[in-house]
Length: 113
Length: 114
Image (tube, rainbow over all chains, first blue to last red; front, side, top):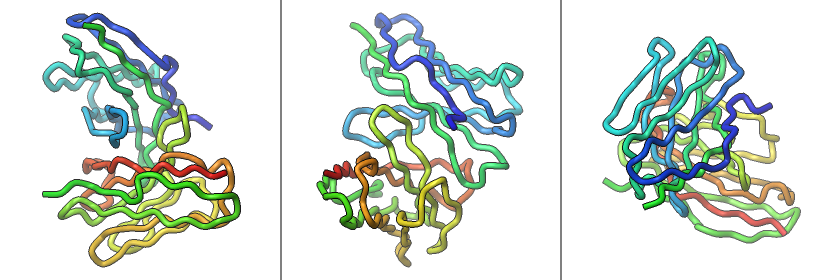
């Protein structure tokens, strides 16, 4: 049962343009969401998070938007840089999930110079 | 400050064998979570250890077991290996089991079961 879904396995964007990565979830009890970035041969690294009491959180070039009614979140990267090329995972946690985070299947972002 | 380390980096086993994977948590962290990442999938939570006690478990059978030591390093043991156990195994450490505390991941152990 995939409670967190990333329906786009891959995305290519020109350097300097906006990258938009999407994530959908099914569990209405999720109330904390995170994005991780993963380079080959490395573990995922935390990028940005958002609590369900907010609909937007910004950190430099990275902004996460949360639409609770649609059970949808997105990560915007502006401007995209070649170093942003990586696999991006969204993850979710809720009071009814114990200590378990649920991860999506990932989106591989390629930023073309 | 050292980050999260895992050993070995790669491992090949045959069906039915047993395997032990190791994780050293980041300095100051007392919580370790283990994840399985199959090819083309996201990490799936196996279990978490907090102060040497199991503190949550995902949907994995009992042949997946773990330990946490007084220095907060951890082991993941898998008995009776199956072909589907082939995956990247990630551990992540954090301060306390509180979900909003950032988890720091190691580079993973790639397990291949033949």
